[in-house]
Image 1 (cartoon, each protein chain N blue to C red):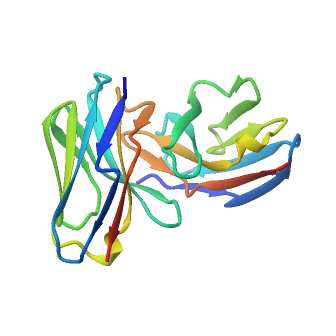
Image 2: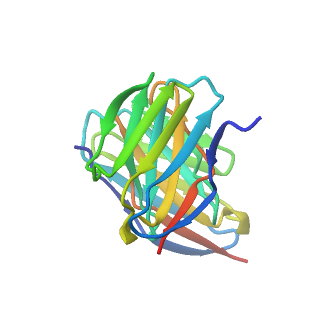
Image 3: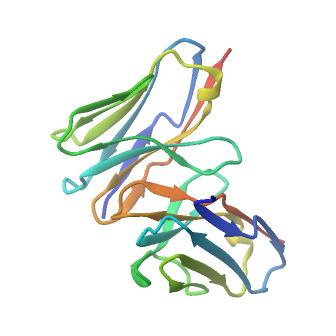
Length: 111
Length: 109
């Protein structure tokens, strides 16, 4: 009965590699998000999709590309990984922009 | 865009004491103000929220107050317990959510 799930939970990779993180929600929400949480715990929104349509695209390097095949899924693909990309990435979903339900997070470590 | 300032960044209280975390926001159009709690290694979870047409909301030991004129809102935790130790985030929403930097609360037994 997991509400928002992400895979993988941990991701360790080398600089220059390309990786993807997958997110799925079974809450029937229309809006999904990707957040980055750095080592200082600051939560910063990266992208938001509403019914598969990109509605928020913050100042994020274009090495990051979100994809929403349907409103229950929002994946994040990262090209040419850099050391500064190391962080915890949270997927979240909400209905009409209010309470957000977060996934368990993906801890990305770039070496 | 919206800017949310949160303070203090760290807060230590004795068990049983009260804790107060304050936030200010810049966009007067913001109309929804949630508070999230994030325990170590876990995901943020909503603990209480308030909408712009309400000045105060309470849920057991936690309460939130909102002053729209001054554009600030606060989280109050009474009778703190060790399990209240976590990072707390305030946020403000108009068309998107903007989070504060977080407050690390430590409750000392």
